[in-house]
Every structure is written in structure tokens, then in C-alpha cells.
Image 1: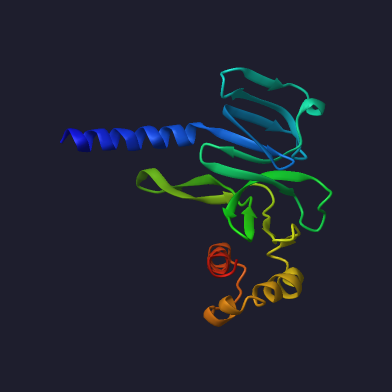
Image 2: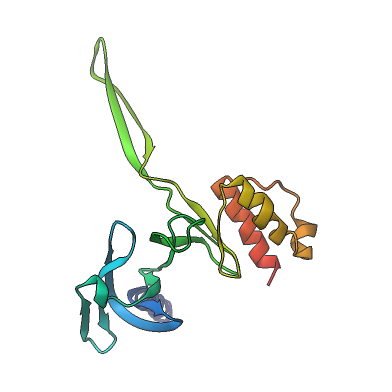
Length: 201
């Protein structure tokens, strides 16, 4: 019984320690830290950032010009990469978005919803009818990052037909095993990319 308890305690401590350690990447150089926080401008660029070094020293960047050129944040178990707001404008505005699919090919989405409720009066019912649904917040972007570093809009028919599908079909093992259609529905397409990543290195 004691061995089981000790084993469970070690598992909990390991998971806590693994999630409590954050990191960020600048020019392929990784800095491990704790209590990582950052803020961005409306255009997506870093404007403030602070973190605690592993020796306990606090580091703060209070101005945009002071902030390092971070390309990736890892915080609380989530990896966020800096990607173009629009795939067609790689030098334009940016966003730090979580990886929807990780691996040789990566996908990103900023599809977000907020709860929306409505009430209408029904005679004889003091509480009325209550309905709840979801409404989108802001623009929806669904982006893919290819192994060569180029970004494409998955929802764009031209990008899908001209760049994405031809690249996927270059892998013979994927071409042999994948029998589905190339739909841009996020859940389905993410599974397609996950299959590609598992078969093609």
C-alpha cells in the first residue's frame, strides 16, 4: 500500500513540475523559466513580458522595444507559435496561436466562441424560454505551416489545390493509406494532417 501511495505521489509531483516549467524560444535558443506572462499589441506583437528564471530572479520587459524576438511560448502545457495573421501576408500582423496539430506539418486556428443566450416570453411560463448557443468572436483563420516554413490558408481553395494537397500526396505511404476527401472542416482536416505526420518523416 505504501509503495502505491509513493508511486502516485511521485507521478503527481512529476506532472506538477513538468507543467510548472515554462519556456520561450528566440532565434532557436530556448530559455526555461517559471511564471511566464506576456502581453501583445492589437497587431499581435509583444509589448510586455515577464518571467522568473530558474534561480528565482525575476526578469521584466516593460516596453515593446525591450522585448526579445520570441517565436514560441510554452506555458502551462500549451505551445504557442508566432504566425502571420494572414497566411498571404507573412510580413504583416501576427498572432501567437496554439498548435492545433504538431509535428512535421503544423496547423493553427484562432476560431473562438463566446456563450450567447436569449430569452423570449411565453404566455403562462413565468421563466420564459431560454436558449443558449455560440457566436464567433473576431475573424476566423485556419492556417497550416509546411516543413519549409511557408504558411497557407487551409480555407483557401487555391492554397489547398495548388500547394497543400500536392505536397501531402508526395508521400507514397500517405497516398496509399489515405482514402478520404480533402475537406477543410477543421476537425477532419486536423486528423488528415495527424495521419500524414505519423506516416511521413
